[in-house]
Length: 333
Image 1 (tube, rainbow, N blue to C red):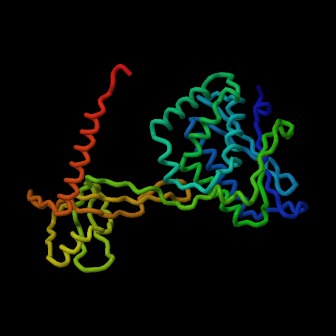
Image 2 (tube, rainbow, N blue to C red):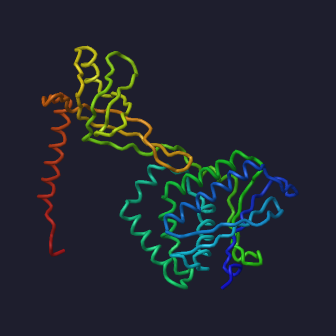
Image 3 (spheres, helix red, strand yellow):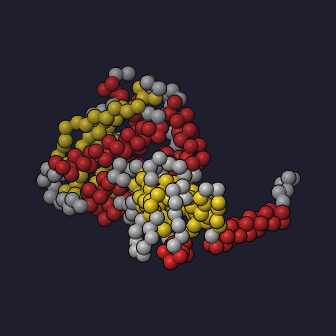
């Protein structure tokens, strides 16, 4: 099979208010193309697919871009894989979310185990020779990729660019054959729906480490919203963190709790997370919610709030154990 026969095309059509206008701001168009390429890159990495992407000359009628995707698995070019990738890109760009989504909810709905299972099944399907697209589970694909943070972020970036460019009134995607004829009905996204693709916030749910240990470098010994500094869990790079344990903070300021070289605190640490424009997760802030213990040179002092926290955890553990005893697993079920 020749390369020309294996090409699968997707027409991306930007509709303008003036149908006789066929030009688009070069910077906006270039940025939109980059977001699409990033989506394809994220998909290929998730599914272990090698891809090659080309574009053909732009056509009129608003502005039409023709995207050509060639895909391979294990080095072997397969028309069904490339056809599948075109369907994937169309699905990602055209399936309108019912409402604005938050990254934390999307992340929590899919466990790591569930995601890996779905990915393995998809990879297995794609690895089969001469598999038809109808045998590839697009629902499973949608389930995985619409919870892929990089895909979500780049899709959000794409529609955010278009939402700020009033010239585009709607967008459509449609698969084409090798003669550039549509092989299905176009999927249209109206301008009023652009906002549903855009993330409300770039914040993820914070992580909580209830067994954090921080070696104090610089305590704050005066009132104010100043940040402390210390080594978290023996990491080589120190962190700046907010001390949100008011009882401990007041004791340090009012009673002059001393901090010497080698002083540690055990604490409940909240780690705030954000996602950057490339879909990468980074830690944006650290906050100590409760100081459990302070120790130096082999001497450990448990704080009052640390005792309360420990008793609460012990009570929860006892309650769970009691519940399990009252509801034994019936092996005959």
